[in-house]
Length: 177
Image (cartoon, rainbow, N blue to C red; front, top):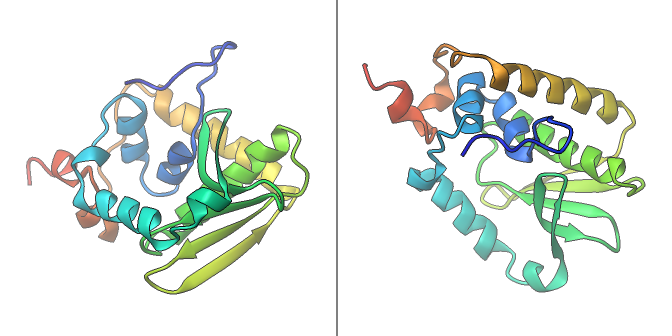
């Protein structure tokens, strides 16, 4: 399914778009143009299982929040804290960017000074991310870059990275190798 356009004909950008922007432009383009492989990935399934089974009381304690194209699984509305659970810190910079984008969307919608906790339960690590006004500029730059990549007529070229082997798009990208 191609990326959804909003009423003003702008693309609705999700946290996944932002994470893929920071991981692989090819993956971003494929995903945004309707080629989605996550449902075929055992690694993605394992990550979802970790998120669903690690903090069993979260579903009762926090709410799921869908706003402006993003979906936050665990949001503590009382304390304005996003809880984001990840399997591994291999692409920590992409996870952090995704969470910063969530905070930006919350602020854009009138929530003052939100924060986030990025959690890696298998590693027993947590990173706190407090709101910073600089996130506004960063997020707007990321939105522009996502729109530019997604609108390109051709898929970006393959750039081999260490993380490719664990990517849900691996077989698609390396079909000729």
